[in-house]
Amino acid sequence: MKRAVLLVLLTFSILNQLKCQTKDKFEFLSNETCFKSKRKILSFYSDIVKFGNIKDGDIVADIGTYNALLPTCLNLTNPNIIFYIQEYSKQRLNKNRIFQIVKYYKDQTKLELNNDFKFIIGEKQKTNLPDSTFDKIIISNTFEYISNCDLWLADLKSKLKEDGKVIVSTGNNIASRYVISIFERNDFTCTLDKTYKGRNIQIFNNYSKSDRYTDDIFDAIVCRDSARVKQFINSGIDVNTKLGDMNLLSLATAISNNLHVIRLLINNGATYYYDDNQPFYSDVILKSSSNACFDILDLLINQYNNCNLEESLIYAAWLSNDIKTVELLINSGAGITSPGIENDLFARTMEGGSLEIFKLLMSKNNDINIYQTYEDGANLLHLSTMGQNTELLIFMIEELNFDINFIDASGNTVLMYAVANGCIENVKLLIERYKLDPNIKNNHSKKAIDYSFDPEIF
Image 1 (tube, rainbow, N blue to C red):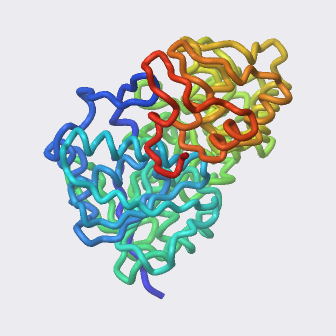
Image 2: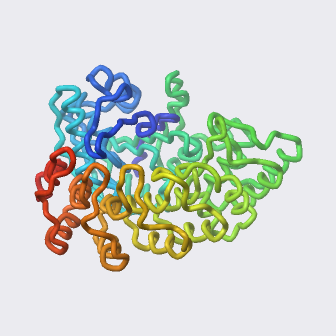
Image 3: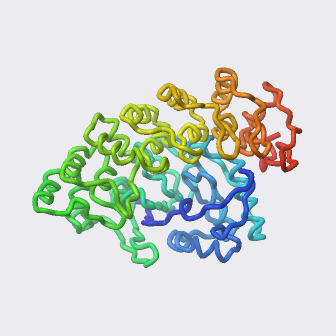
């Protein structure tokens, strides 16, 4: 059986390093953090291009692409790359949002772009990519959300060419040594870009765990050896010792079902906080909470309940569409609303398009005014078009009696939001079933069609 190749970038992060301002929700503005030239794009992506040896003619898949920023920028620098962009749901793979990104960077750089992307909707246990096709598969800040790693990696390996490579960017969300251990047990040869900027590359191939991991306490945790962990704790080791951005408890919670080691660390004062009090969270923490490990759950609730929504466990559970964990966290005291759209889980639920989670939130908070408007004058009905779920839209109009003609502070209609968010089904529903007029203009004298980047939307 062939050994596939894994390349691990320790701290490479795409989405967290680029933030573009928006105007009227739909139009990208130039911004000092945005790329205005090929030189700046090459500078930003030089590590992933060099380390991954991505070149013209490669067939590349970007798993967990979200807005396709990486494929867009790499195609500007290597226009002959063939890109497959994959997400696990239509809600996440928003074609209109992707077309906006493409248009913005073509306008900024004045470069030609092969944006004939191939769109793939995957599943949590398989990618649905074509077999034996890819020179490179990129997984950026996504691996921590895979539920059954071994099954998923068996599928992933079948998608590579004979000499194909997988490039994993772990960011700050998960221990690179944990990623390596998972890939190696699935017959991958692993190359770790350990310092990112320093180019200190280590090769891992057919070494034993004891040879590979010289940090004994971390090795004990990776190997799920609770007896050795206890010995180190009894010897007086600092339970909040860090390796890079990871501490012991963060690493332990990245190992599924390692509850005994987690309890040992918690009971001896370990915390989930690291790197200037930024919390670590991932899907596996939620699994630990769901498995009736109530001492861990109490700790999580106490630490995360009052932080920003995007740093909270309930937000991570919502991202995973994990209704049971959302309910568990709410019942344990996790907050679901706070001032402003950015910290309002109701509003964020619209983006995910989950009718079940929306109903759950309503049932758990009778005091919330679901008809409230936000700073820009939009309400939940406007935001519901982000999730591309027609059932949610129908429920809000017909069961909750939202005003279908309500406009935001800029005069944008619900139909304009649906067009801008690229959901053909919602656009058809609003025009055909609810008779919304596509010719209405907003305060900027624009019609709904002016916000479409997808020629198929009308």
